[in-house]
Length: 173
Image (cartoon, rainbow, N blue to C red):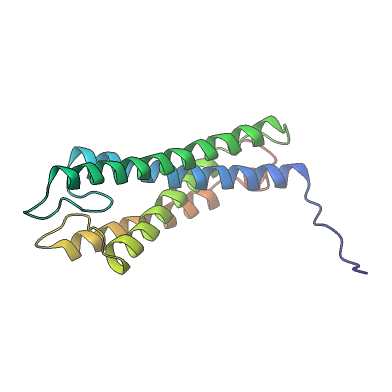
């Protein structure tokens, strides 16, 4: 028989954790959407999987690019919706006012985590695409990773800069 008791968190602490989770989920999704819109569609530097990033590409290769990019965007949108849903639930719990710097800080952490995970896995380990393929691609890939580090560090700093009461989940920041 276990003597351990369930972790009993007060409502403001649960709300603060939910807001942080919401922010990270939102940041992951928004980072993915920004990546897809900017690099895949507007700049057309790469696709999730570069089927057509070679001279002999066919229309079927382009269609596979579009499908892979669409699935990528759907997952990113799902993460964004999950973040908004989690935030909505946290605010409806009525435990505390929204800590002002916590949400944008957590969102920046989420966006930075997206850049780091996507950059390490897709650009370096699997090499399914690079930020900008061709001459200098390593520099672009490293700059993308550096942006992830800066976003995480900036987000953490923003959350730490929140007033003490907001970090405790007791008042607005």
